[in-house]
Amino acid sequence: MDLVERIANKSLEIALPLGAAGRGKARRYELVFREGVSAMRKAQQMIPEIREAALGTKAPPPQAVAELKRLAAGTLLKGLERRQESKRGEIVVRAWGERLGRLVGEFVDILVDELYLGRAGGSFARFLRLENALADGIYYYTDRNLSRLWDDYKREREAQKAAQATA
Image 1 (tube, rainbow, N blue to C red):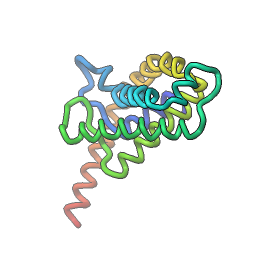
Image 2: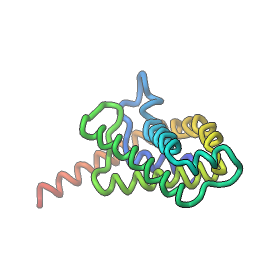
Image 3: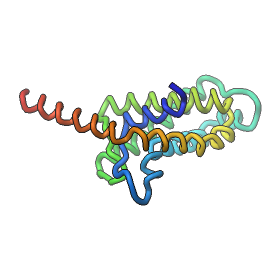
Image 4: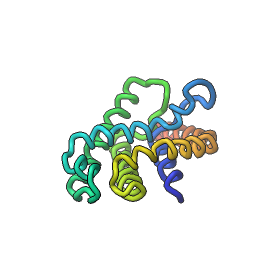
C-alpha cells in the first residue's frame, strides 16, 4: 500500500465526508489530512528542536519527534471531538472514545514518520510542499472509494444497533 493510500485509509477510518457532490467537496475529502498537517504546523512552532532542525540539515532528536506527535495528535483529537459534539456537517467522525484516540495516534504516526521524517527528510518546508500533491491523491482515493465505505459504515451501525437491542 502506498503512502497516499495509507493516509487516505486511516483518514477514512477516522471520519467519512458527507455529500459526494457540490461545493466544498475537496475540503470534505481532505479535511482530516489537512487538519493533521495544520496540527503539526502548530506543534512545530512550540518545539525549539523541531524549528532548529527545519533550518538546518540535521534530523530532529527523537524526544522532539515524540513531543511533536503528542501535540499534533492532541490538537487533531480535540478538533475531531468538537466536530462530534457539534455535529458540523462536513464529516461524520466514525470512531469514538479510546478507538478515536488510537486512530488519531496512528494517523499522526504516519504523517510524522513516513511523510515528515521519511519523504521530507525532517524538513518542514519540504513537508509542507508535499501537502498539496498528497491531498490530490487523497481526494482521488476518497472519490473512488467513498460510496463503498459509506455502505460499510451503514452496515456497521445497523449491526451495532441490533447488538444493543438484543443486549
